[in-house]
Image (cartoon, rainbow over all chains, first blue to last red; front, top):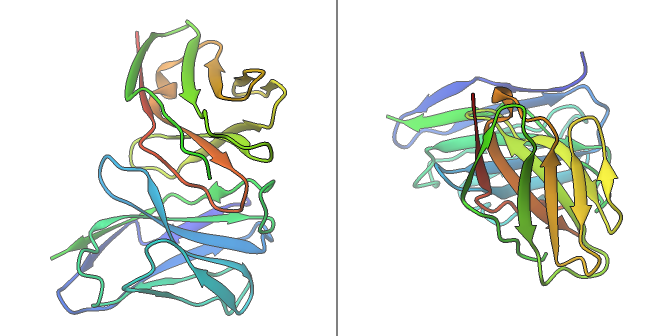
Length: 114
Length: 108
């Protein structure tokens, strides 16, 4: 089945710890995105990538980092600099970057700080 | 991207049509109207999009007013599984800007 997978479903982080969220897609999409969702709120864009080895900051990139070494993978690291990391994290992909392209989402990872 | 306004919540009886309104009075000529929905604790699901013509697919219909300042998403026969938060988004770049959406509750 083609789709987007995110792991783990739940992730716990201790104070001062970096954690990495996985996002994999087998849709052969060029563009990938990371969003953050807080309770009762809409989604906010963290980072996006339109091609391998290229990525750009979104609206709330501080405290996060990404890499795009492979087309199918776009991991997100939540660093200790992110002071309020508890949220629902969603990864998405689209065939290419562009206003006509539809984004498809993974099931999400819920991050909790201990 | 233009901002959108949606009612925070709506109810609909199972089997009836659900009509979800969206106001986007500042939309510009090259901005598309997209609809997504999000069932609790899941990733958003794409529903439909359009520019100025009405659109229909297997999930829903999208009616856009002639002046493009508002639109309505229609679920023709709502089921309990359609209970979700529905997001109306206007888009002219690759970015999706989500608001807080409309929480649709379908009841038996």
